[in-house]
Figure 1 (tube, rainbow, N blue to C red):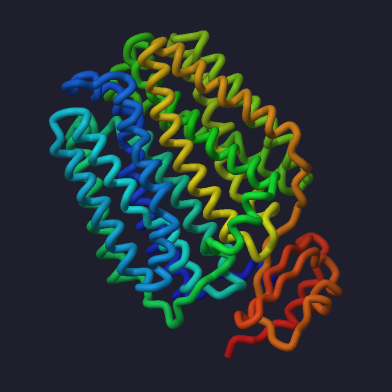
Figure 2: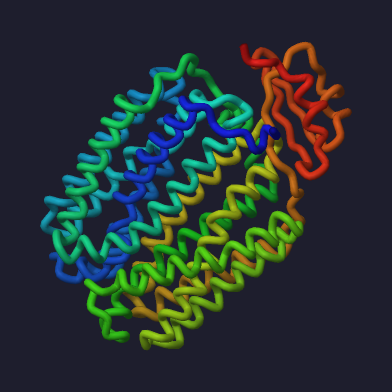
Length: 451
């Protein structure tokens, strides 16, 4: 069986599912208020559209600033203490927001939520608990949980808001964070060895090289723009659905649920075209154009049918880009710099959420609903221009294997191996391969066999 297709071992499966749950709980806590907060904030003392946007996006600023230091701290004091501490900070922030009686209290609470920045430490623990051959599968499992949590948030937010209100949602996310700590210590195995993984963690010595790679910077700008647009749009969509489309806030989930389901179905053929037919760039650029069409449609029409159609286009393109961008980062970054590239990418994503909330809120404050949409369109237009001039991505896959007494030249001689880096002292080869022509049997014959 191909290493690309091997199943996770029982301990890896247990670790992957447990870590995916922890990550999903945290994402639910961050995003369940997205489809309801704009309406809730209208009744808060001192709230303005600008402060509403800041409250939505402020978590991104603290997350972006702290996730890399937290990841580095986990290398020194251990993964679990850092993750547990981050979840505890997140729970405190949730309770601060739940008890707040004004917009400023919620801003503080959301900033604290983002300060529980466990993403880097969690990915490092996932790397500790997976073999090189299975690491991509472990990371994919966690990635799927993030997407599922976001989709669930859009449906659960309006439903829970009807029964327990936004304050109740914040309190509930504190409970989820505490449950995450329980899962961490009761179900996540202790790694036999915890060390730095350059495929999963940021390395400061590689940071300069990553920041000088233009193609990676284009992709970082892309995830910044994507989450900027998400925040800007959802500052006003709940208001439009209520005021213009006549859909009560408690019924918004009835729109989001089918839209999300259909958008996931619609994006599958495009993913297959992108990966199997080597059409990554056309699909990528076309998805950005799709977002522009969607936002233009939302700007021009306010009835329920129009909003439904263009939200469907929006989420099809959004989900496609959200799935494609990490893959493009992995294909573009040098094999041994992937962890650093992903760290910069994640920080760009969180900064995009912060900027989208803050700038979108300012535009909404100054020019109303149209201002928020126009701000999103401006960002998308810049992104489209950047994307059109990016190089065609190489259709390569990341491959890791344990080696000893093997040179980079030996590995490059294997059919399908394009790039190799063997780091002294690690005993791991970081490779980029053409999966469709790879002589995997010959490659595996050079690997160290686990005892």
